[in-house]
Length: 171
Image 1 (tube, helix red, strand yellow):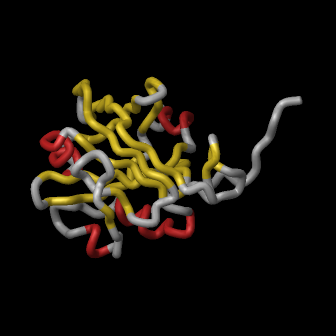
Image 2 (cartoon, rainbow, N blue to C red):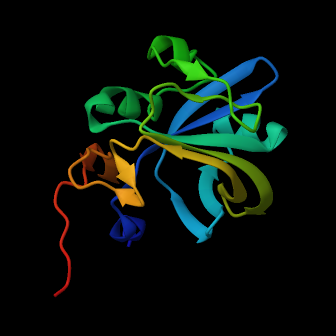
Image 3 (cartoon, rainbow, N blue to C red):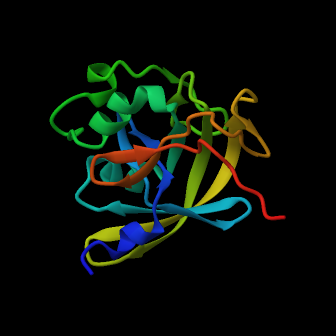
């Protein structure tokens, strides 16, 4: 099945920010999973400009924007950072990292600062295992879990996204 991986979706659509030297880039990333309480794995195509930067810096941030910013989320994943300064083009404002040199998105709903611990190179993608060294979430949207209906953008596949609109609890 060509799209078997989409059975695993929806997944939070993060904005991955990478920085090396004076070059900073952003891309949309929905291929991720927790590995330990303080460790995450992401999958990224080694042809991506973001991969080039994070493989040199060994760190990155994952940022959650609200669904109202879907145009930015979509465009950040469909433009090449080698060809255009996506941060300027999309009007993304950045703040300095708290514990790493890579910035996070200003006014994000939440962000994770991560340092790479390991990499597994597959055919086209690398599985990057990283330690979460700092995490922050806006209490208006997150208190131990995302609050119901807060508008976390989750990628379903293709051009389709959804949110965490309604929660269900077993009896």
